[in-house]
Image 1 (cartoon, rainbow, N blue to C red):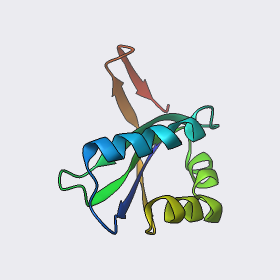
Image 2 (image 1 turned 120 degrees about the vertical axis):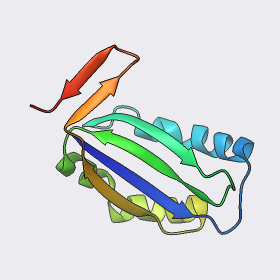
Image 3 (image 1 turned 180 degrees about the vertical axis):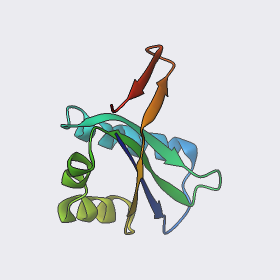
Image 4 (image 1 turned 135 degrees about the vertical axis):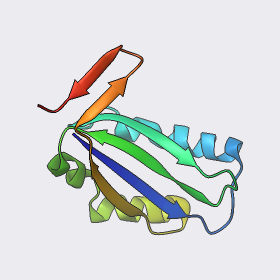
Length: 104
């Protein structure tokens, strides 16, 4: 499994309520995406940085999401360029399903 963390510095800070509204407007775009197990939207306490934490089945499936068209979408929605950082996630504890997941 792969965790991808996307972040972008916002041109001006937003409130939690503004972020929630924006995030809810884009959330349906991520439903049913091949290989995406979960996405958590994130907002810094000062409202200057937003992004997402994604849990993917594989790096290839993650990279299929973060195309130039996705970058344009982020740029148009938030007025800034995103960064994407990948991490291997060999073990995941899921307290909702009471499972410990491993990619082996």
